[in-house]
Image (spheres, rainbow, N blue to C red):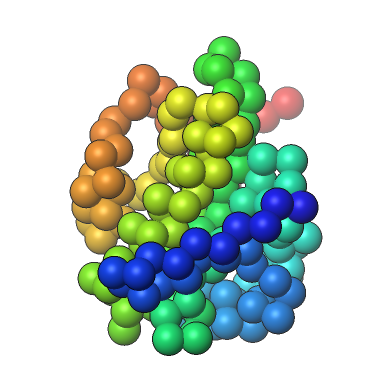
Length: 161
């Protein structure tokens, strides 16, 4: 397990590895943003990604001693021929602390973890209608990449066997 604890003296945000005791707040924040209560999902995510091991990261940001957000990501290797890269697949910030540098501090910390592991690119996906998240990632220097996500609705028949 890698210990991650990074304080930004300008913002006052502390980014650190999530611990089991953080799960109730993580679940609460996700429900507040998504409108869905997914405790089993977050417990399983913590089991898989907690502890900063094997290129997996589950980090939280504290502001004034309270959990203000979380970010989850991992290093994935050779997906569809791409070299190893960092993937951020969850980023949530308490709306009351937005514009306080929480997301930026978490994103910078996870990118530092990816860099130290030897990867040169970070990736994510977001819904094209999620303007807030899209604007954040673009403000961090992210732009459309070479991969194009494809999807198919299986509920309306799709391909059958």
